[in-house]
Image 1 (cartoon, one colour):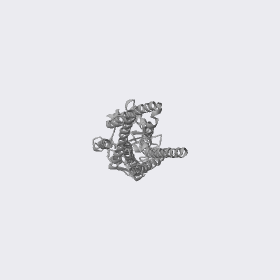
Image 2 (cartoon, one colour):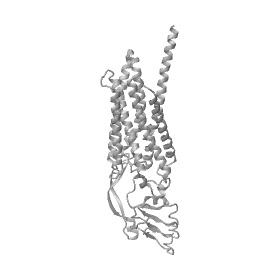
Image 3 (spheres, rainbow, N blue to C red):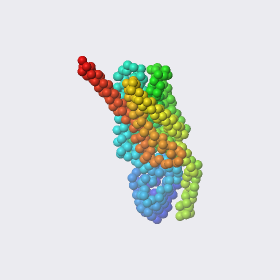
Image 4 (cartoon, helix red, strand yellow):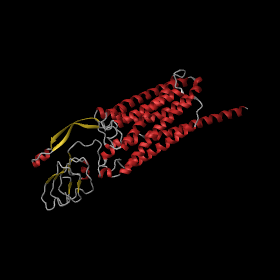
Length: 437
């Protein structure tokens, strides 16, 4: 059987249990269950690979229903809370009863705000840096670093806007037509996942490079092993090649490991999810006890990490990078405090101190945003903490990309304040010369 028609149960008024198990059901016609007020148990598990076309009121007429057996968990969302809904196979780890794949109105609004902010803010930073010509080698290198960081943050803006646009485009057909699997396996979702990983990993590597450059400049000011303009360009090229390669792994292995970008609706395989394993069939005890019939459910004996590469990437590489950044800045500020104690070197160290403070502000905000992901990921993989779909969506929308939206404004504020302070120093110098004359 492929469908349940409205006239199928005409005249059958005393049915108590209906079993459509092991059929290729694709459609339930509106009104199919009218006048079936005596039915208490309904089994409509389908072997069809195509999802059901659902609609509100699909179970109208089943006034006495107490238990529903399904494979498609969306059907459970349309039942009253007092009806037992038995999903006969392990559910998707991020399944919810939402009608669109973005969780709620707040997330829908803020993904637009943060996405557009990242796009236009980073375009402004890139334009500003390209137009400003640095005279010193240090200024040129810093400008290159910040420009590349803005480019990586710009990619995160594209990712967020792309997800927001697709949420509107797919709309509620995501739920009613069962387009979740179609969306997760789509080329658009793969592109979105590629952009998000590219942006986040390039940002982490660039911040590590910026910190290493500041570390050498401040802690070892007379060292000959400092970045030149050429070596800085080579380092940036290597960073982008590595970041692109890491991002492409999920795309190239999509057919083998769909958990990379195709596990979540926001197309990012963070290490927060464990999927079912040790699958086996078990007899449904309720059906056996009440009706002396055997119905098999699929059960999971344990869980495993969804994507080992995400653990290596987010909990290995990124954690190591941020620990390196943290300890580097601790040493930098110890060095600065020691230098400040020497009165004669305060003027020499002022520019280095400003650069260190600027980088510390930028890296500090990134650190605060990444640590929740790292800590929660470790708890999920070691202790077995469960991350709900709501928490997953909030982390992806608010924590992962927040600095891509925040960084451009940090650059602008710091750039303007630095310029203002230099202008004030020039004015004070002129005033002192006039007064002296």
